[in-house]
Image (cartoon, rainbow over all chains, first blue to last red; front, side):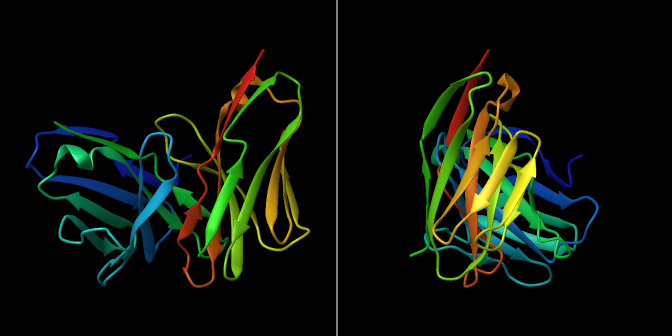
Length: 115
Length: 111
């Protein structure tokens, strides 16, 4: 079964509104989670590294004020797309790793469509 | 610059026709190489992690191998349900635990 859960799986919003996506590790604690973005037929591009109890680390070119990341607990990270625009429409995927096994698991992804 | 290149971009096979997918990488210190399967509209599903050259791992009809420059995902006697996009990713020492992905190989198996 899934070990990393994302919600919602699909969201449609109007331009200018904000959308929050949740990522939960279900049966393990994750001090670090990662947020990726994937355009159709493209690779997963790392957006940011989410650290529990501290600020997220953003990749070059990713606006931290637009993509707010909060890692409130060892099992939950959230990504908020603020003032969304149509060009923010994409597939957002989170991942978390089990330190004990070295496995990195991904959520089911969240399809964001901004009208 | 750390980079992952997968080939071919797309592969069409008949059921039972074995083949291999390639993942070439350049990375400043390899911590691990990962293979994932991704179905349309879904997140990647973990398949294998390889850590050192010469290592091999198997799962059902899939076998992953690793050299110092590339990894192969061998698929033996594939079935239609093996149709998916297969993603290769590397974990570099300097990048911490974030993964760098290739663009994937989309495999289609017809009966």
